[in-house]
Length: 304
Ligand code: GDP
Image 1 (cartoon, rainbow, N blue to C red):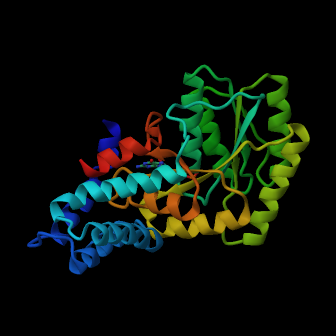
Image 2 (cartoon, rainbow, N blue to C red; image 1 turned 60 degrees about the horizontal axis):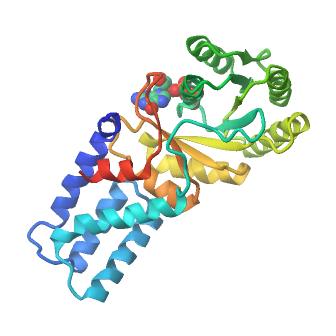
């Protein structure tokens, strides 16, 4: 239900554009395909993914010779679900982590303002609710506000946080956090990192160092590198995904602020273009407003 609410603008916008795209037409012809391309691009699905979808629909039209516009909705839905399934197969539907060893470490990356801290807080809340022992690491030491904000969330959710002074070495904070987590038998560690995208070399070096140092404490960490993207920024989110995937290996995505935006199509495009599963979506500012991304529900609420 809350997903429907979160995606309301995206859906209304998309479906009304889609119905305009086929108005006065009975079959899917080149005009309709052109219009559909425009609808998808303007819904922030992204050019590459849009072309992929159009190609697939075109192939179906030429195979069956005739495709009525009344079937277009269902076919589009099928193709989008198919794309999402290719990248998001095997994604969990619950807030959980594989506890193959403790702690499970999630390193969170993303530029400032996208909702990184909020997502970390919401995740901590959910994991804690599942009975997991959670610890946060404030390795975004570049801004005092980042440390303070994470502290606010740690207090709110009532989980421990490891931090140092602003300006200290992020890798050192990460080291402390993992050491402490080991001692306290913590299940899940979530490490915040600085998102200075304008200094790409620094960003890459910093993330590499944080990882290297964490591996000294717990081999094989981080288990997950979660990139947080602001869904309401549309094409900017694509750019950020491009830059971060150059700077570090990204294993999963969280797309935030899908409430109040018509740009929910970014979820489809980014996941497809970068072949990274979307693990979480943010649909509000509250503690409860994070959802495990469910591709079936997502497509359902997009189309109905
Ligand atoms: P950070 O700089 O990336 O750590 O960003 P913050 O976590 O501080 O979030 C920036 C702003 O976005 C805050 O006002 C958050 O409340 C808001 N925010 C984060 N996630 C969401 C979301 O899913 N929906 C909405 N509407 N706002 C969000």
